[in-house]
Amino acid sequence: MPEGHTLHRIGRELTDAFAGTAPAVTSPQGRFAESAAILDGRPFERAWAHGKLLFVEIGGQTVHIHLGLIGKLAVHATDGAEPAVQGAVRLRLLNERYVADLRGPMVCTLVTPVEVDALVARQGPDPLQPSAEPTRAWERIHRSGKSIAELMMDQSVIAGVGNIYRCEVLWRQRVNPAYAGRRIKRGTVEAMWHDLVRLMHVGVHTGRIITVEEDVADAERDIAQGALKPAYDRPNYVYQRDGQPCPRCGARIRTRVVAGRNLFWCGGCQRRT
Image (tube, rainbow, N blue to C red; front, top):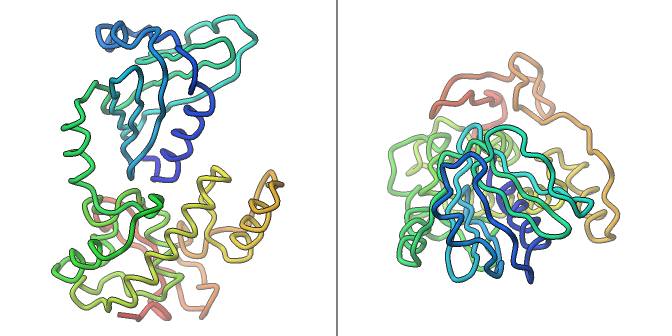
């Protein structure tokens, strides 16, 4: 499932491509046809994300999209002609310069402003929202007997975090993933939060999950200079490195399934509460 930075990046791409235009809105697959007819030819306002939820605002209406495990939303430039439809396209936006096709989403539906507020309220704070801060996340973690590894995958605790960011941030901050949330100190939660803010912002700009510090620093410098490289190629610290030596202490990297996903961690140096 795409992590939160991907949804924020898609929101930026949609807004850049369609804001200020009145795109044709269709549902070639047919499953969104009635709602598409309501949106067709109306002014595109903006697209934005909170965690793994994407919202597209067109003509006073809002489309809620959740990509789920297999969904994809791609924005492409056109040569002025409408591209042929490929595959089961649930939603298509088309103007004179761009086309956006949505395939395989878990959710694609019109929602009211009240429903938007309710969807966002059920989520935890999103590290990519400019006004977000970690207090609400800390309060939920501090009250919980679940492991911090489980809590990081709970979207009602921190919105937008997926398995790669979970594994890598726990390692970067030396946090024992098995410790219950109530054992984790507030300063540790805040350090994890600020690390997520930093890494996920890099992810929005590069379109990649980058967690190795040298690459993160390079990407931040390149973002500031407006000159991103094609790739930042160092492997992650622990994710998918089961049995290999920890790059910090040399102990063996371990793995087990936690919250439905393979957690990777170092039993040697991840001891912080």
